[in-house]
Image 1 (cartoon, one colour):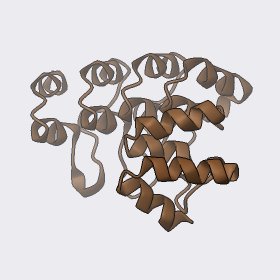
Image 2 (cartoon, helix red, strand yellow; image 1 turned 90 degrees about the horizontal axis):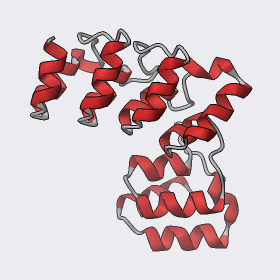
Image 3 (cartoon, helix red, strand yellow; image 1 turned 135 degrees about the horizontal axis):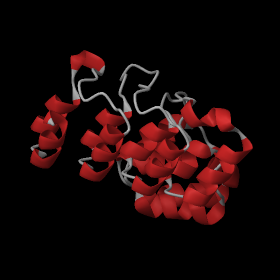
Length: 182
């Protein structure tokens, strides 16, 4: 089933995928072999229509889905139930703050940092990206500056020794380059 879901996502066959979900609602809880849920995949693939459909059928299942979906209240609820989630990695390797940075969830990033999230914890997968790498990849000046204000290392190295400055220059994100150089 994983291959079928990825094929539909990659080929932007949202109607076909939604029809599959309607036929078999258990697929709403699908998780791939790396630990990413279908909701997470819908956001990774930037498929807003699918994301909206899934969220119309169910609430986020965990703090990671809450952050990705931009649901601050749900994020707060998951964290109030279990403070250990603040810096815990998802099954596919990212912290809640890492997701907030990658998906430019500024208010959630502020909340997580205010609760004591560590701005320097990298993913525990092959990418080894810290939240600042994610905010730079997302071209989010606001989240990048927020992370820097909370002690994020501007020289952190991810996979292949790429730093946030490398990524910002590559993306032609001049304001982010200036922030990182400060």
